[in-house]
Figure 1 (cartoon, rainbow, N blue to C red):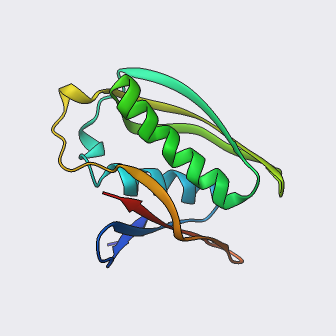
Figure 2: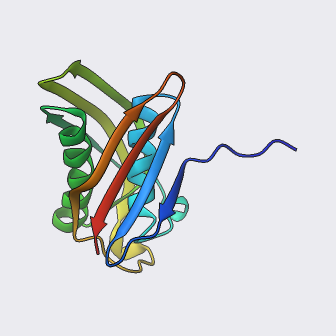
Figure 3: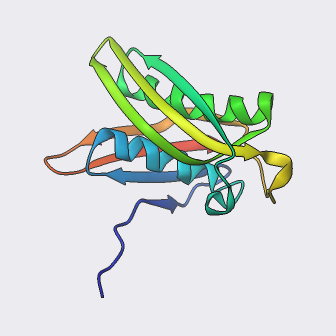
Length: 144
């Protein structure tokens, strides 16, 4: 039996939530970081892809891009009551000084799903984007 590849893990943190997300590419690590954050609030596997929202964020460096990406997902939840259950066509382009992320979020109205807890904000505290030869690790602390 083949073991599933670890997508993210939660780490100990005194007041907030801290996680690391992994991927064989930057895009995969960013996608897994979104699910690590969302699964603090709901079971994303239960969310049906009833609606699509295209998102585009930018950042001067990879940490800013990661921060803006996760904040955009929180913004859609608070402003449009949109919970993401699936991410498609995630593409990261650009270079230091001007990165861009484009993706399609699929999901539905938060009211239609059981939620628990709330992520108030993404922080730069202990944030990490680390690329190695065949793996990318991102680390994020979110304010609960």
